[in-house]
Amino acid sequence: MDRFGRRIVALRIPILIAALVLLVPSVIGYAKTRVNYDILSYLPGDIETMAGQDILTEEFGTGAFSMFVAEGMTPKEITELKNEIEQVEHVKKVIWYDTAMDISVPMEMLPEDIRNAFNNGDATMMIALFDNTTSSDETMTAISQMRTICEQQCFISGMSGVVTDIKNLSLQEMPVYVVIAALLCLVVLTLTMESFLIPLIFLFSIGVAILYNLGSNVVIGEISYITQALTAVLQLGVTMDYSIFLLNSYEDNKLRFPGEKTGPWHMPFPTRSNRSRAV
Image 1 (cartoon, rainbow, N blue to C red):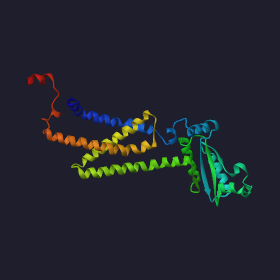
Image 2 (cartoon, rainbow, N blue to C red):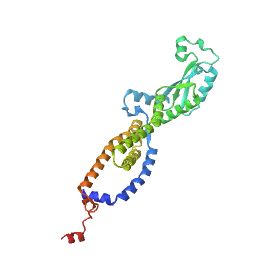
Image 3 (cartoon, rainbow, N blue to C red):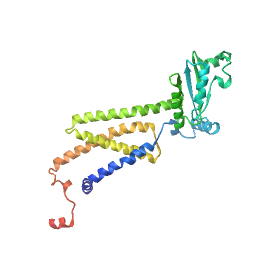
Image 4 (cartoon, rainbow, N blue to C red):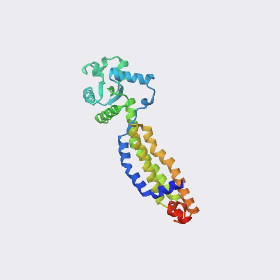
């Protein structure tokens, strides 16, 4: 171990350069790693939920649906909105009143229980069918485009809408949590350590390790959004302890082996000439 440690110290500059160079493929790998927001994909494929979704997708071409409510719009405006949403990619069909009857036919002609199920005051509900699974990237993209089209007059729900909201919240709040955790660590370490530079070195090295971790996931192709959300904060908390332990060990060995050239970590590697002189 002594020889190994001396070798690392001797090659510290090349190791640092290699570590910085490896950040490039790590960043590229992180960018190319897909984040999976589909909770159902972690269930066994033979259970009824997964089997039913597969049957709907393969045989009927409809693996997901969302309900959205439009408020304060006339039947003509709702029809125009419905036609516009049907043009969104991966939206297979939108079901509303005009799917069964022309809007010239008064809705009051419908049975009361059916009318009340889809209408409440000036609000009416439509159902959008998608040609992909509930949490697929295509379905979530279609949900986002639908919300852009609907603006403030419509509200989209359903499992696909929930998954899209989870994705948006994760992308918005995860960096905030990581920054808060890093700042709190920086404050605590700065107050408890003699040098203000050491906490910066700790955070830099841990940040590099986090990028290595996230970038290496390109090998498996995708990671869960839960993994992505927890990786940075969890790794920051766990590896910070080991960084502090390593620093304490370094300080202890400085006291055990004082002097830059007399300590065993700075002794030259044994060579033939050194051994002959010692003899």
